[in-house]
Amino acid sequence: MSLQALVYEPEAGETLTLRGTKVRVLCTEADSVGASTFEFQAAPGFDTGSHFHSKIEEQFYVIDGEMELRAADKVIVGRPGAFVTVPAGIAHAFANRSDSPSRMLLVCTPPGHERYFAELAQILARPGAPDADDIAALRARFDTTQVSPLST
Image (tube, rainbow, N blue to C red; front, top):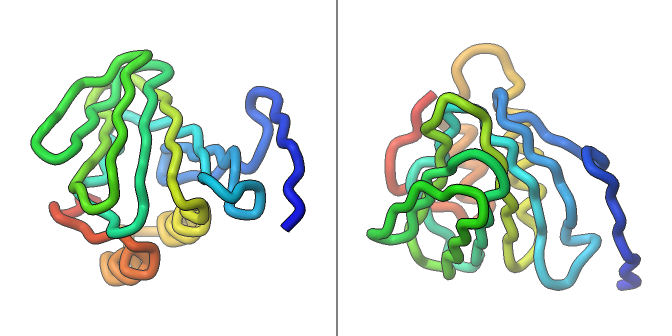
């Protein structure tokens, strides 16, 4: 593997859309041996629901607005500068419960979670309510076990 330095200007790079929430892919498995990195521009109402990963660790850093960040039994309303790290096996969630967009950095270790977001964007781009079975199958393939029900 021959890695290259990455330099992105603001707004550059691939951006995926999850029904109003934008996920800018900053660093992928092809770019790093350590982590995949994303900028989330979460629309009001965005909510992952509580879930966990058996092998993936995630780190969240709030840049703008407010994000509700849940890790195990701890919940904070993260404002700019808030940071949460979630080891593998710990149930967690993130949501934008405010009336304004919010923005945060998400780092996933090991890298590769960009494929999950790309496939999720395809499912959510279909007209109508998201197919719960397709989302469940996607989550199963990408080390994501849903704990709470998903809302549509």
